[in-house]
Image 1 (tube, rainbow, N blue to C red):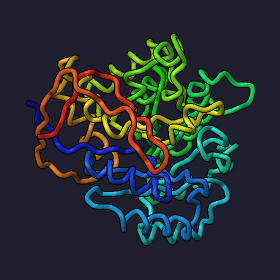
Image 2: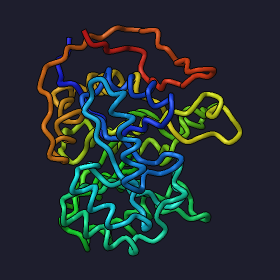
Image 3: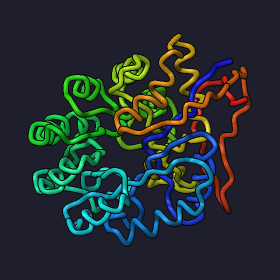
Image 4: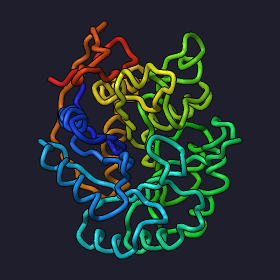
Length: 337
């Protein structure tokens, strides 16, 4: 038997339409807080768009504390941002490089043109969440994260020393070192980047369900991520980047990027900490570190989990006329009792 606080997921994709209701319901089961990403087909770049989406989600929400992000690019209206900040419409700003991932065609191509927005966020203590990849058609996808650290993030850190930054879904030992070496910045780590690597993704048969951005890296980088998460360091916390795509879009020639991990993420994380004898740091990684970084209170009610060996996992969840592919790694399952 294991006792922990109900976890938080500080990087969630709820999508839109009927799928958002399905995915939100699953999140309600597992998390006390979720931070929702804004990269919809029509990105949430304005008050009108964000309020419409926010109201729909909150109407469907049953239990989780849902926090929202604005899609930050250089087309955002400063007047809009000031209005939303004053009315607490959004909790954080999310910045995507141009064409870095799903629905990022409205992303940023020149970091330095974002100066006025960074100053606004810094002045109002609004967190900036970043998809950290330097995207160029000629770039090696495996080097995008390192290039972003060197060419963009270093510049932001140097010029906006009080800006609270979250580097999302880090995948490399370089990012781990960067986070440790700089102030006012922390990082989320996903379930799949902790448990998978290049070899498990494409070393045997290609596994489309593991295709994601940033792409999975080698075991050397995976080990660095595990060490960071297991350490209990306040600089690292859980953000699943759980990104649902229909099975028909994953097992397809133009495979969508994203791993849907919500259903079994907590079980997988608990098992990872259990086998490494680091369960004393579970609450830090799953709840406390993220809340501390964002200055949030948390529900300290204790939840009990028990371990079932060789559990029969449900690989697919039926959704309308298709399915979602549930990510799972371990054979053992931790269920709440």
